[in-house]
Length: 231
Ligand SMILES: Nc1ncnc2c1ncn2[C@@H]1O[C@H](COP(=O)(O)OP(=O)(O)OP(=O)(O)O)[C@@H](O)[C@H]1O
Image 1: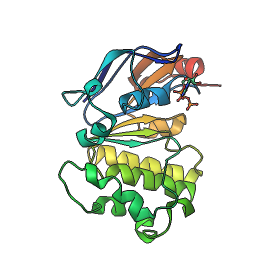
Image 2 (image 1 turned 180 degrees about the horizontal axis):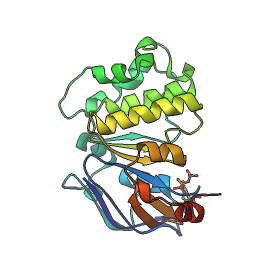
Image 3 (image 1 turned 60 degrees about the horizontal axis):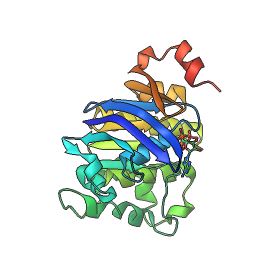
Image 4 (image 1 turned 180 degrees about the vertical axis):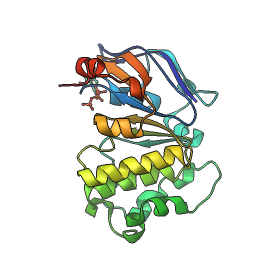
């Protein structure tokens, strides 16, 4: 579904992503992992078209992503839940959700029931301002907003960051449900190992901008964890 080949990216003179390859099959959940600063968010921003490439190819669902603008990502069916959630604090929950609607491929103008079914708290707080929600509720809103477009691929950047443990577990259950029951393909940046193991089918480890290991989640062993994840 998504294939990246030979990705090189620079911030000015600083070479950040090096000859990076990545592949996600339809229906799977891939966890992109690695220590702070190895380039995980940079890679997601490259996929989303928010950062330019020096070289490399990106293909999504048969389309050349390098030739598509940022706004085309949502039209092609890529939903993004960015780091820090980026909720509009002064807009209501419903207004935050509606932002995704114009990019729907089928032209529907209503927030899908699925969003309120998955996140009943958003239905209860429909008229509450985004900025007044707790961190966990904002994360649910950010996931709901990405779902409004009816994506084929959902990309999430550290959805558990700064969220209390009971909500982390709830979010894990929801990502799993979206992936395994609803069939959404998922690319997830995640630092918490138990969470990654719970939701991920495969892992991809980055180190200093390179893809240094990947495989089935069950193959993420102590040696890899020690070398590339433990701080
Ligand atoms: N806008 C920028 N300009 C210059 N350098 C940047 C910029 N954003 C990130 N970097 C650098 O690029 C490298 C990769 O950063 P990135 O945020 O992609 O890492 P990360 O793996 O997502 O880290 P974290 O887990 O802390 O979010 C880091 O060395 C970072 O300092």
